[in-house]
Image (cartoon, rainbow, N blue to C red; front, side, top):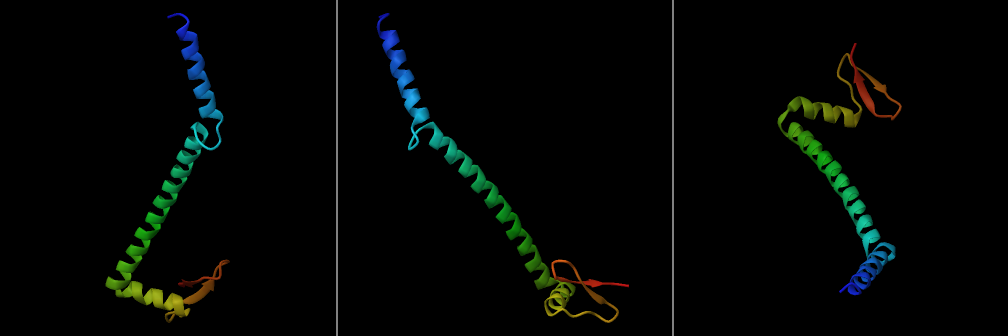
Amino acid sequence: MRREIPIALAIVASALTVAVLDGETGIRTWLETRRDLATAQKRVAELEGRVEAREGETAALRTDPLALERAIREDLRLARPGETIVRGLSGTPRPATR
């Protein structure tokens, strides 16, 4: 029985070494897959947030006449009487009030 313990330990150590060092399979691949999954989950959460924001904008455009008017004026780069269009560094027009 004492002779089997070192043999069993050698087999386990060999298996662990292969699992750690093998680039195609094993622990390294598993860790990379977990990292990729975490990155993908963060990206999905970000995109879901953007979708929710767009859905909110869409709902406002459907129900709020002032939001619709503002969106149209921004797209056409028009101003209401008394407003002045000021372009920022990005080139997007923003109405400025006096």
